[in-house]
Length: 60
Image (cartoon, rainbow, N blue to C red; front, side, top):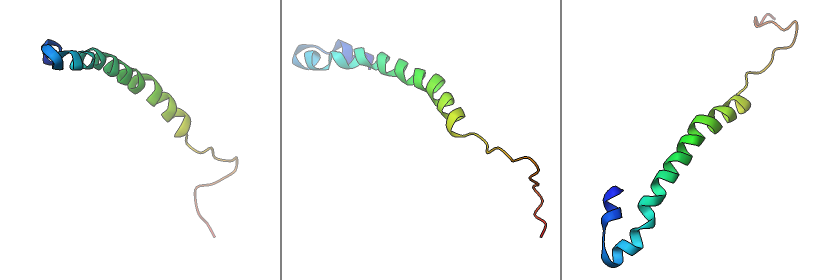
């Protein structure tokens, strides 16, 4: 993305915002990966609670 910042003339004006937005997108992705994903996984993927007196053995 860095070379895109040095393009000149008309295409340079068109592509100027692209390399400036890449670090913002990467930082947002890192924030989501480190904070929101583990938080949501801990909330959504809880182990089911066993009731008292329940036994794992299936005896008929």
